[in-house]
Image 1 (cartoon, rainbow, N blue to C red):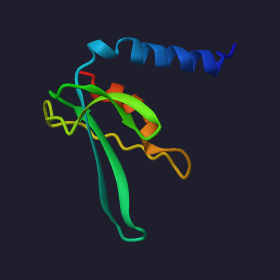
Image 2 (cartoon, rainbow, N blue to C red; image 1 turned 120 degrees about the vertical axis):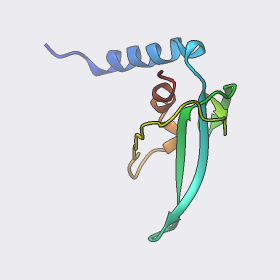
Image 3 (spheres, helix red, strand yellow; image 1 turned 120 degrees about the horizontal axis):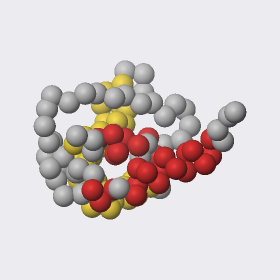
Length: 102
């Protein structure tokens, strides 16, 4: 028996966002780094933060983040995700949830 993906995906979204007010603060920074083939490459960084999160617009999305908030803890693991050639890096809202885990 296979589980339909859409209902599972919707359940995951609900579980991640229903508990949003109780999640730890999430800091966010957007920057550019040198890329020899294109000049610069945009990177987005989500991390645990002691900053006060606020609902902010990131491109076409909204996330509850602490813009440039102070880092909470350390050393921290690194998770790298590439959105590929389509879409937007701003759409990786699960990174906010991962960054808020204790």
